[in-house]
Image (cartoon, rainbow, N blue to C red):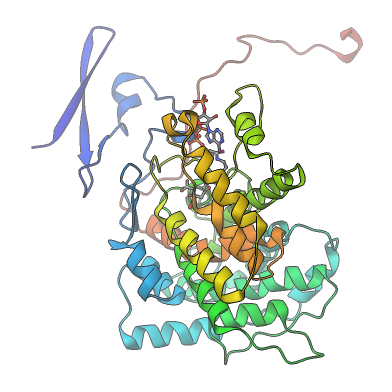
Length: 429
Ligand code: SDX
């Protein structure tokens, strides 16, 4: 028996179906609302709007739960690898040994980029933000594989998936190496995914560079934690661009730009810049907490708050623990960590943050770890993007096969002039 709700509008009663998710979450199906009532909905930022039905990731914001294909993030962070988690998100199940071996092989053997791509980096100013560079270069991959642009078949999509996951770390490392005037190294297929990335980032032709296995493992866990998060801003961007039947390279390029924003994935860079500013200002945490609470002050506590989590972000809890382990193992005394812990403690005792359910999110501690691993601050959002790539891909692929597939095209309420006429230039004052 389909549940329904009733809308009474202009004396008429309309019934709309209610659909229910696996965990009992309910949605009013308004796909026929305008056709039956003439009404549309209005929901800035889509706070109460579901854009799709998805089987990939589940969040419970009140309980602080995050599941990738039903598996708790805590288990994946402890037991999985990023490449295995990427497979899980994209293909819907944990890979068998042969599936894992095949997927890993293809990801390894697509890690080089076309030599011509290196020329792109000569065109960017040395102080370019790496997110702008990465989005441009990832988008440009579409110019190298044009035979697979329009309506690619499953095999072509599979190759594109391998290429993107394999080449993104190379493209990302190149954006850093170019900015410091160092040669662009080749990937090393003898290394695992994060070892290879660290080697491309920090090796140079003049001396031997050994990747610290602990560092590579910490990075792998961070990539797992960032791999997907259902309909966040950047994933919704990838879906919207993909809904026009645009290719996966271009859809991901758009996702990278969306992630760059300081309210989204750019927050991990903004957190460190905020902590540094507080430290430079004498560590006056109370002053900045009060600024964050002042409705007239645009300052916000970066790394705090979330559209969905109204409890601790489960990823933040794992990253906080990881940060302590990393600093202990590396023997790093990071004053900004102490500041972050103090800031969190003060904020979480403050009614403003408690009443608005503002807790540390995934970006609050992650930057402290990247900093300890000597990753430059402007590369922090790039680390988020490398992690989020499998999620973007999984949602793009799910959308293409969605039985409810439609091009994304929201409506609006018009507030402009009702009638206007053209005024010749000579009559304008
Ligand atoms: C990510 O969606 C995802 O899943 C994202 C993400 C993912 O994995 O993809 O989890 C990754 O983007 C994490 C969020 C990183 N961004 C930040 O840390 C930036 C700081 N946070 C805020 O800008 C804000 O909390 C957002 C953008 C994260 C969420 O914004 P919402 O859901 O639109 O909430 P809101 O802006 O309406 O805030 C609700 C209230 C407001 O006060 P009132 O208007 O009700 O008086 O809380 C206040 C806000 O002013 N508020 C904050 C605050 N965040 C919200 N006040 C001070 N400091 C903050 N950080």
